[in-house]
Picture 1 (cartoon, rainbow, N blue to C red):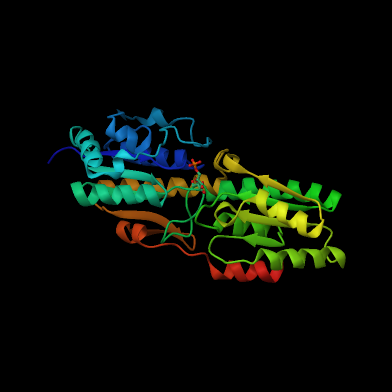
Picture 2 (cartoon, rainbow, N blue to C red):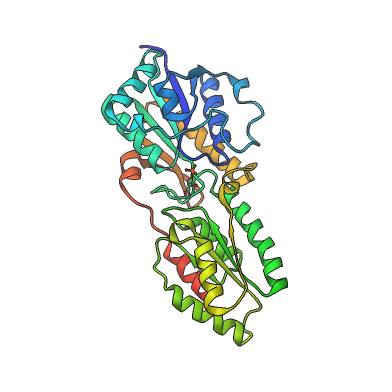
Length: 322
Ligand code: F6P
């Protein structure tokens, strides 16, 4: 039997904790005597043969860093069967028979296509700040990003309160409102706008007017996921129709960086260890995630073929606590 070799890569939008996960994969593989390769810059690097063998020291001094030491990218070429064949050939020539992909649902979809077409063993780890991978209630980096947002909300509340203004904060989440929802609840926002829930801006504006005119609130905090609207447009409309000074803030890519929280480091480490053990033990086409605090194994194809929904309990809680 040929010697086992596995590879690790990060793909799509980076997220804090990807380094901790990759480090755990590498160290677990080395501990088990298995060769481990790092693919630079995601699927793009796989196609371009940008692949290096890693050792224990390759992953030193990264657990505390955001970003990803392997680099990441989005590759159009990998979306084609020809691109994937080219990429796979670069793994095959090194005897790499297992691949750990850390990324969001698009990255895992790419991995599923590679598994289907070339039979390579895949283990996915959910790595995205959006927390939108089906089957797991956690994705690597979501906690750090949520903490970054909470810090921004706290600061905005200070100044909004001082001026009796309305603050509209736009956070990431093109298709998923998890970040907006949990930070809005934890930050005490009056309104949380997410792509999964329809809202009537006119109704919100008339409520805001009432809250101000009748002195029910000193100021208003609105958190909007980017997929649910633009802070600049919403703020302009609120100001125009109510006369209340309203300021938009777009947090942007600040949310993607930063030193990972302890939760992201620990969970990413647990997932990384599990991913390496699975690949070494011959388990393939799975994603490891968390459910109710425990590591769970999800079928890769289920993970990519299903869409995660927003917990209705959050939606209800946000309304009640408004
Ligand atoms: O990582 C996912 C995400 O954070 C989305 O919420 C956001 O829309 C997107 O990345 C933006 O990423 P980029 O600017 O790198 O394309």
